[in-house]
Length: 335
Image (cartoon, rainbow, N blue to C red; front, top):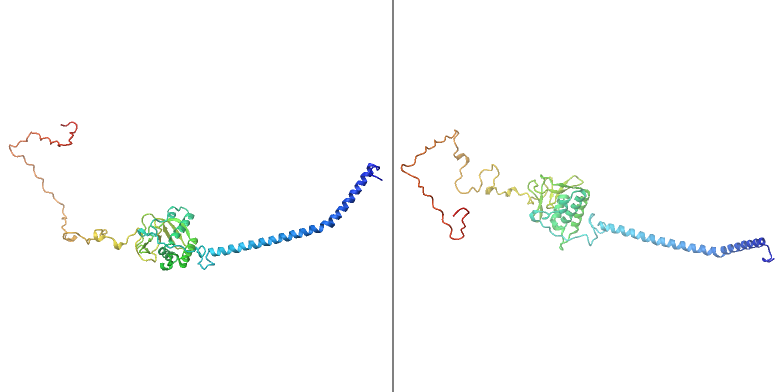
């Protein structure tokens, strides 16, 4: 029976039957034709993704290894440098130049960062600035090693023939930096009773006597073992509470009493005779004439005498002074 002669209901049933048949055929064909290639494509994609993940893992691992090696080089652990030094072998050294030790100071112009430090953070930065200057001067680096590390160092061993810092200088600087990192550093004033240090004849020295005068703005460094130091902002000198193990010499504000000029008239109170007494004969105090113990009696006052008889005062006024020949201008009211 053709679709044209069938009733609408019959045609609808036939259409639905054909649709179900087509659906069944297309589903089986799709499963037969496309299921296996799709699985193969999925397997290929999974393999490709696994390969890229493996490559990415290798790259990440290589970067981690390089970072570890670089950090070890930065701390000197892989290039033979002492712990605390920075940079690689090519950049771990620096030019050694003597600082300006005018006025027997460590640094003639001082350390600005110390003068302006108001917080512990600023004080710590100031200490690092100070060390940057100290490490470049063989005499100062040797003196700092003596004071902070309690170690005798020959300053000649800190600089090579090219005026560069030696491995020993780099190592000592690293140790001092480590000590500062572990120490408490705060802004402070150096004690007036402390011992100043200075530079004399190319070596760090101490004052012969205790006493700090003038500007005492400083940073205080307290090491883990309880030792205390101050660094003066005005000069970079180290100040200690007790006499340090350094040779005596000139500092920037404390004179040597043995060079006091008292023989030339500056004897201390009660010092007695000056060596330079000048002309004349010296009479000791016991040989001087002293006033008597009894009160002094003044002589009687002389009596006034009358003028000679027959004398008269001259009434003629005194003559006026002569005017200058040139440039004379009489005062107002005068002739």
